[in-house]
Length: 320
Ligand SMILES: [Zn+2]
Image 1 (cartoon, protein in one colour):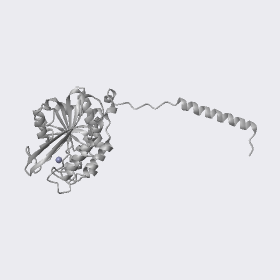
Image 2 (tube, rainbow, N blue to C red):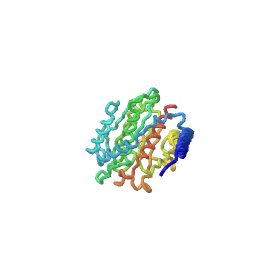
Image 3 (cartoon, rainbow, N blue to C red):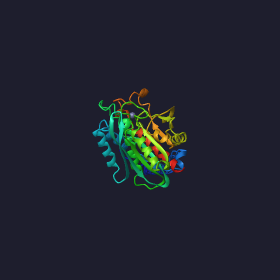
Image 4 (cartoon, rainbow, N blue to C red):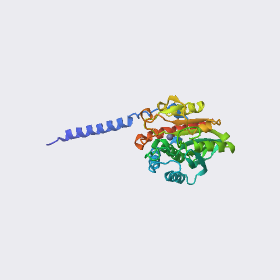
């Protein structure tokens, strides 16, 4: 096939024009608009709300891998050491005592990691690490009830560690012996926090606590955090404000119920408290306190929602 010189010249000219047109249209291509940030984030620093959900989920797996962790057990001791190993280099207060229970004397060990802030006052963020005692021989591992609360605090420690805090001091509290040993009652439950609330009242710490945030059973893949009628209304409102600002409001406060949990000894002493708990674990709560409380029911997304809402609530409290 032959191409005449004239045709070739024309062709080259056309190619030249085409390339120029394409280049020009590429330059002129409008940049896509960046998605608008939610109003709540405009004046805040989302970078401060980092929460590594996959790492929190990995902590939950490692905690569950110890097996049942009721008070007085070897697994419980292993978990204490695991928590303390993660807090190496942090300021840690150890609150150990012997609890009188219907099943005899047990060593109880609350663990507190302290991250100091510039403002005078303390925000306590708590969660229990013991697992249900009556179910100790059923293979019950408490992935959500005991596991998720232990893990979320470990990840929160990663977020507070090594950062200068302009707000209040933050104390992370791993509570022990939250669970009843026989049957839940005011005297057979909350052994760790009943002891600590009294101790902190006696040594003057209690009146420095601006807020007590509690996380319990917060990794359910179907997360529905209750509005707790036993918590402090203005602090519950602040939690909802934080959740709404982050776009998580659909996971919060669909129902209101009174919850008995580790915050009660502090509520009774006048400390503002909010319990972040999802008691609707499985249809009608069928997984709660059963050997079905296992890792497959959990989601890292739920840990992230709870973790970020706690961090945002802390940020809002700092401004008060
Ligand atoms: Zn429980």
